[in-house]
Each structure stands twice: as C-alpha cells, then as structure tokens.
Length: 216
Ligand code: VGL
Ligand code: ZN
Image 1 (cartoon, rainbow, N blue to C red):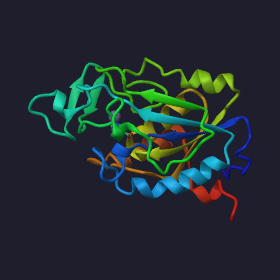
Image 2: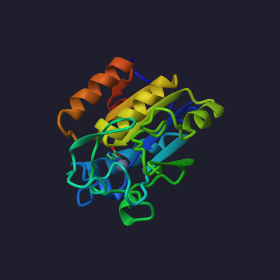
Image 3: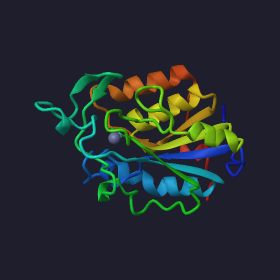
Image 4: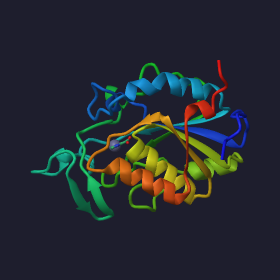
C-alpha cells in the first residue's frame, strides 16, 4: 500500500521519537548512525502540518538504569513488577545536555513535545503508554481530538521507542507507518528482529522515505 504524498493533510501526523543527544554517537546510550537520520527527519517533517516530538526524560535513579540495581550491568534484563526490563546506562536525565534534542534537529513547527519516562519506577519506551501498559501520556487523546487518524513514526531507537510507539499507535486504532530509513536501531540480543516481527504482526506498515518525499 503506497501512501500518497499529501503529508500536509490535517488527518496525519509525524511522530519524531527521541532524537536526543544521549542516543547519538558520543552520548550515554549511543545508537549507531543516530546522527545520520537527522537531516532526513528535518526534510520529512517539512512536509507535515502536524508534528509531535517525543523526549525520553528520566529522573535520577530511574528504575531502567543499571546503576539503580546494585550488581547489575547495562543491557541485562531484570523482572520489574510490570514485566521484564532491559537495564540501560544512565541516560536522558531531566534537564541534562544529553536529554536535549540533537542540535541539528530543526522542526520549528512541532506542535507538541511529549516527555516520557518521568515515573521513577516505570519505564516508557512508547510515547503513548508507559511500560505498566496502563498509564497514558495523553497523546492518543490529543491526536484524536485533532482528527488525526494516521501516524508516521521516525527516530530512535527503531527496536525500542519507535517500535513501542508504533505498536501502541496500532493498538489505539491509528493507521501506522514506520519510515525505516529515518530510524536506527540499538539491536541488543535480537531486539531488532523481535520488534520488526511484532510490528508486522500488529499491522504496522513499513515504508522508505522516498515514498513520502517528492523528488527534489
Ligand atoms: C530508548 C532505551 C531506553 C529509546 C529510551 O529511545 O529507544 N531506549 N530509553
Ligand atoms: Zn530511556
């Protein structure tokens, strides 16, 4: 199914996920190639009337940090009350440089910034719903009130925050595209393959940016 090119349409939104310094090479939780997608995301965003940015935004001592669990190391998985949790290096601390958007990300018309991961005890990869699978950020209601029925998801990381955002968007009934070349993955312990299979199963549609951009 080829999407049409009218991205300016009021019924669709671009969701730009976690394009933050800590996820760029040199940051606390670097995603390989994370910097390479920034110019492409700027170009894609230029065509959209509706743009929402997500910002991973954790308090010190967050439950997803390995440093909060004595004896544990980053990328190990532990059981938390809401299920398995991958442990990460400390990242995206509220108010830190690492939590800021990449300096070359340039989307002046972004309408809404959704901060997530603020509950010290619960992670939130998704821009819609926290990892307890209950607490929402309000994003679905925001989009629905604006009459948006289709979302395009780009950003970091494809196998974590992009995937969970796309899965929850489907769960909330949005037609959901992931623009693959405008994402990069962490790929820890098979996470990319699993995430791609889950998205496919849920009816997320994978496209490439050339299907969204008019040739220059
Ligand atoms: C993310 C791990 C931890 C992401 C955020 O943006 O994909 N990954 N926090
Ligand atoms: Zn995080």
